[in-house]
Image (cartoon, rainbow, N blue to C red; front, side, top):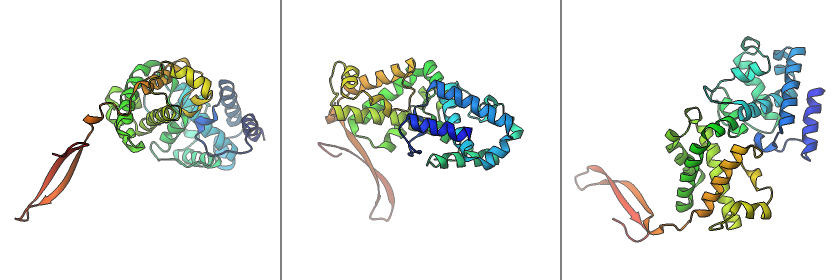
Length: 288
């Protein structure tokens, strides 16, 4: 009952009656809620064996995945992606929760929230990452590098009108400039989400060329920061977001438009029946 009450209180504070399918980071769990959740789960596994909770209590499963996502965002500071530190923070020994049992509780937990794991990487750890958002401690240590990556991709995406998949690929192309522990597909997608959300806000509010885009947004749409997978009350996260929005306001969709080109590759068969690869460079003005 205590676990259910925790969830009910959380929903009530957000004017919800049940989960609505949003990403877990979008519930904006506060520091106080995170600390209370940590204590509640520790108390629960002390009273009831974690194997029993994992098999029989879907409210435990729901709170476990929420806690894991928040732990990633608040506590992860680099190194291998592993469940061990999350379990240790709850005083759960590795031999108390077998990998298959852990996977079961994760699947049950996400199902409660109306979600499905996006991949089985590290047995669903990647999905925890995706739902946790960008890790605060690594933003603090390597925020300038992430800002540079997102700024470069944003300018290209604004110029060429890239799709989501193209933005993700472009972020991946800049992986060498990111902290090694963040060079994963799930993080690339989080950074792409940042870029795409910023471009959407720029278009909605016509931010191009504004001297103070942050001030304008704070007046026009006070909740605009809620669209990002960030802890918006963290100083390093705010600085990262501010630099991204300013970069967007300075980027022009039509910048150097005459230089836009496309390489088109195709197979061509000669009169002798020999196939060869043909490349053509196309621009708005001519094809060569």
